[in-house]
Length: 116
Length: 116
Image 1: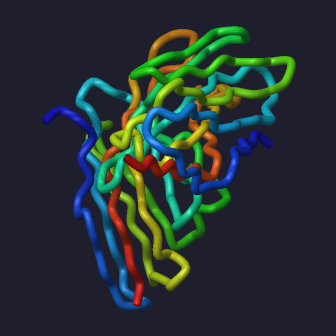
Image 2: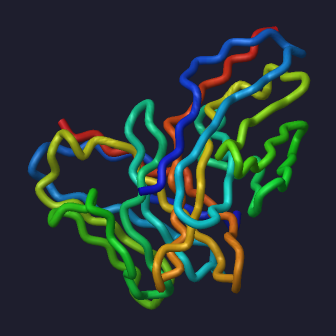
């Protein structure tokens, strides 16, 4: 399977614990995005990487959130000191970089986080 | 900022009925427009897209036309099937600054239920 993969698919954690999610994009895609989706809502943009550079962070990304993409390959999203409001589906997407136009983003199946 | 508004669901139809899901947007510049679909238990998949005014995107019997004058991108299908039951998201993508972010801004989704 050469699609976007995310791990784990589900994570239950106690409030105050740290969690880390991993995303493996499609190998030739140099753009990588993280989104958060809460129940009944559409995904909301969190952060964007082009290769290994994190070029933009949404205001939704508080100081407790950090994302990395070492070597421009897989990416991790860490949430420190989790709160119940962090419970959501975290989606990763990747897309190729082509001059001009807007290219399709391919999404993983997401990691569902439940903070208890 | 950019925003997408789509009709609330659920939309319940009988098999072979005509489907319309309304979507309007607000954006600066010239965004690309997308419809994504999320089948139960699966990730977001691109259904169709249109990159400039008057373009018509089509796939699997679904169609949507990019209407700049009404800032709309309504999704239509002439005859729905039970297998079309899913959540449909309208989205736009616009280049941001020098980073070329082009992240997606999503509507809140419309759940379609097709009954046999």
